[in-house]
Amino acid sequence: MALHVLTAILLAGTASSVQSAGLGRRLRGSQTALFATLGEQVPPVSVPDSKTPIRMLISAFQDGTRCANTILRALQQAEHPERVSFNVLQAKGADDVDCFEEFKSHHLPKLCHDKACSRAVESRIHFWTIPPDEGKGPVHQRGLLSERADISGTDSMCLSTDSHMDFTEDWDRDLLEDWTATNNEFAVMTAYPLATSDAGVAGKQTWISLCGYFLEGLVPRGATGGTMSGLDNPGRPAMTMNWAAGQSFSRCHAEKNVPVDKNLMWIFTGEEVNRAVRLWTHGYDLYNPKVSVVLHNYTHAAQKFWSYASGKEEEEVEGSRRLHALLQGHATAKEFGRYGLGDQRSLDDYVTWSHTDLGGWSAFLAKKGINPLANKGSDTAFCQGLKRLPVRSAKELLASIAT
Image 1 (cartoon, helix red, strand yellow):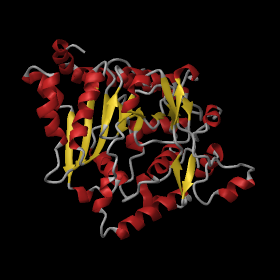
Image 2: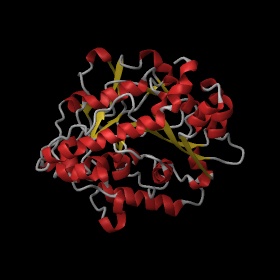
Image 3: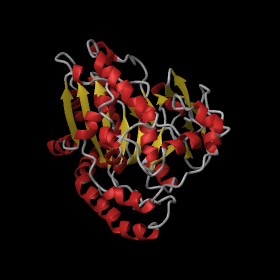
Image 4: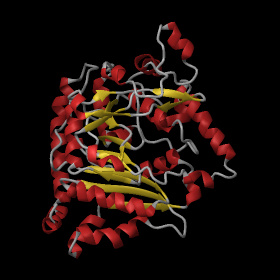
């Protein structure tokens, strides 16, 4: 994008968001009437366009240099950078590079030639820091970000990702087109991103099949994603039972209605299946994107948060207990509150529909004559054949957008 036009379009962002949000409100009444008695799929309440806001959620553990570059690349590669805003929570020690300051000093001058442009960009970056020992693992830290993030707007889209990412050209347009192709207001597009070293085959040339879990102990862990040729693209996003932390794209009401559980301290394996079953039981549908537009820098992928876990045994045990309680269907409303399962579909439904052993479900599956998916590679054919399971009440699901 030419730098001489960037100032003008960055300053246009606020007005555009207001106009787009208004469109979503105008369409909702007719949709409520149409789907008042059905459990079927609800089409988008407004059609995303060039003004639809995209709000990114980025959790960074130290990693300030790459975090700053992630913000830069998201803006540089977007077709409409003025609609992209950022929510960043960085666990940062005294000697760590500050993500926001690094972006302002090293990258903002590449985007802006005047103070007005710089102020417009900075106003769309919401940034918080915590000490590293308060991060307490990826789920807990994402949960803290979830509490702080600006995800306002009835038609806003949210992209939750990591702090060391890159993007293909016009990624914002391609992601919105992909989401719209589901014809589903409650679609969540999610997959493990390609590596940045695979940028040459990214975009619409490939898509990631993420379909199935294998048990690590008694906790499901996502199967290795398969890189599929764009020539074999099914034409629209395929359903999956998985959720991936590296890329999750949906309406922002998904982040409001199913917030990340900050109580899962020191959990790594289990983050993704927790999010998957909670989103699905709340009525959201998970899809493999048919485009590979978000890229992940997998170099130096050390999980540094573990070095701050000394003396945290009780929190780790409690986090594990809480995860197992939810996966076994023992997540009471009193204990879990807004971090529990939804009531649009049941956990039994998820296990049956997805052929997934959540740890201790083998007898349940055997009674139904189902062999659980247990391979370590993605079962593309299975997910291509998945059919959406109706929700209990589309009317209540649609009403949840306004809460």
